[in-house]
Image (cartoon, rainbow, N blue to C red; front, side, top):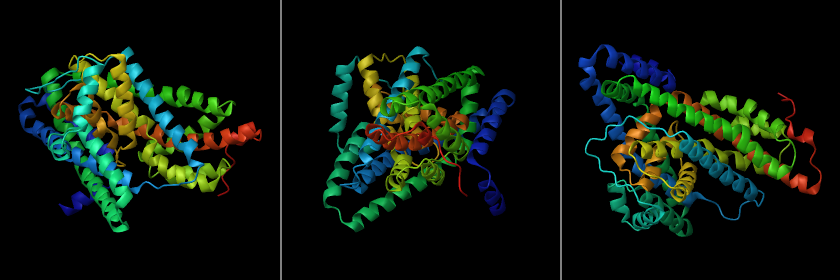
Length: 418
C-alpha cells in the first residue's frame, strides 16, 4: 500500500482528475447500479470543501493584512495599481461574456433554499447585515461576506499591535490551513468521479455538454484579457505597440505557467524574464512574488463566471449594479485566492453569497470548477503569471516614456545569457 501511495504521488494531480473524470463517465453509462455507491465520494469531497473553505478565507485574508509592510518602495505603487486594474478589468470581461452567453449548470438542489435579491438596494442591505454578523456565527454558517470583513478588520488591528512572534504564528497558521486544503484537493480525483457519475446519472450526457459550454466562456474570457484588454492597458500607459511585450510574456512566462499550474513555481522564470527586459531588480524582485499572490486576473474571471452561472441556473435576476458589485467582490476575492492549485475555486462562495446563494449550492459549483480544471486552471495560471511580468514592465516603461527615454526595442527581451 505504501508503495502504491508513493507511486500515486508522482502522478500529476491533473492526470489523476482526468482519470477520475473518465471513470465517472464510464460508470454512469455502463454500471448504473454502482452509481449510489460511487456518488458518496462526490458528497464527501463537497462536504470537505464546505468544512475547510470558511476557515481558509478567514485565515488567509487576516494573515495577508497582518503581514503587509508599510512605507514600501514608491515604485511599487504604479505596479500594484496596474495589478488591481488588470484584475478588475478581467472580471468585467468575464461578467460581460456571461451576460452575452448565459451558462447553466447541472446541480443537485434538493431542499436548498435560495433567496435571490430583488435589486441592488437589497444586495447592499444584505451586504451590510452580513458584514456586521458575529465572526463566530459567520464561520459557523459560512457567511463569506462576514468572514471576509472580519478577517480584514481583525488583520488591520493585529497589524498595528501584534509582535513578531504573533505574526510568525499567523503565517504558520496560514501555511498550515493551506496544507490542509492541499490534502482535500488531493481527494479531487475521487470526488470528481463521484460528482460526474451523479450528474450524468441524473441528467445524461447533456451534463458534459454544459461543462464544455462553460469552459468555452472561461477560455474566451482568458484569451480576450490576454490579447485585447491587457494590451490596451499597456498601450494607454506607454503609448507604443504593446504586442511585442505581450507576446514575450505569454511565450516565455505563460507557457511555462500553463504546464506548472502554479504562479509561485513560475516566479524564477518571471524574474529571469524581467532581467532580460532590463527592468530595475530592486522593483521586480518584490513585484513578481507579490504578483504571484495578488495579481489574479484569471481567478477573478473564474469566480465571476461560475457565480453568474449559478445565478442563471437558479433563475436569479442580476441587474447591472449587482453585476458591478460582483466584479468588485471577484477582484477582492481573487487577491485573496489560495496559492494551491484550484485555490480560486474556493472563493466562489464569496461571490455566490452576493446573490443569496447558500453554501450547499455554492460548493457544488466549486465541484463543477474542479471538473473543468483540467484545462481551466492551466489557462488561468498562464494568464495570472504572464500578467505579473507584463504589468511590472509596463509600470517601469511608462516612467521611461514620460521622460522620453523609452525605445521600442526596450520592450523586447534580450537573449538569455545562460
